[in-house]
Image 1 (cartoon, rainbow, N blue to C red):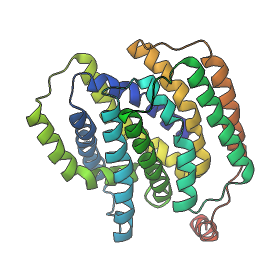
Image 2: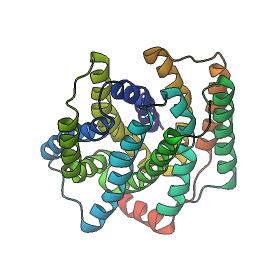
Image 3: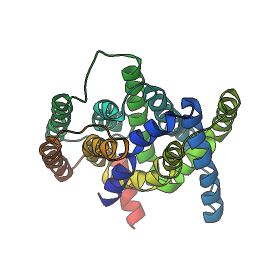
Image 4: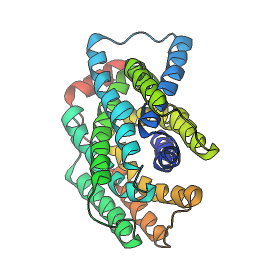
Length: 297
């Protein structure tokens, strides 16, 4: 749970940092440039730790992780936040725990009990009611909302696949190998974006870009995938119910976006639902239980 909370805290600033970065920098440069920087850090980490190469089957699963969290989520959130606010993005991000839990059932074989879904749904409802009442939702559905939906869907897939794979590779090596796998594409797209629109930005934009590179794309996943692997993808994924409220707080603090006083009430309701989901155990497949018993021996 501690690792999961560290991951959520790290990711809660991703939307405000992206909003700050795309204010001056090209969205494609932000999305893929952060992956290039994180990929270079990943290469250094893997070399220093002398990490063994993944198997062929693990490479295929790492491709799914890369599609979700290295390419999909950064790209679509960057495109969305060119015109949308970070606080508006928090509305769609509230769907992420439910989507992650759904993919955990499909990809990881986890079987949360019915009460888990009730508690998670209540937390999601609390977040959405708060966001609607706060005025974070406004206007009709536009391209930015579609980009955010695509980002959340791919991110949930990447979380579920990465959390399951981290049981074998570990959280740090899972994100590092996914970044390395993506590096040729990330570097090529970044180079094209830099030539098309040479990067010139304010200190605030570069600070947002640096945060996305070092924390959101690299260090945050060390904790997040470690937490998903140890506690279960569906269960630990519900900790992200608290992320929209944290994102609104960062948006107000760093970007000056308005946050209403109802945030405290919403936070208490969400944290209560999160606490309930953490008390409910997900049923795991028999082969996972047997493997854990073998590892223990």
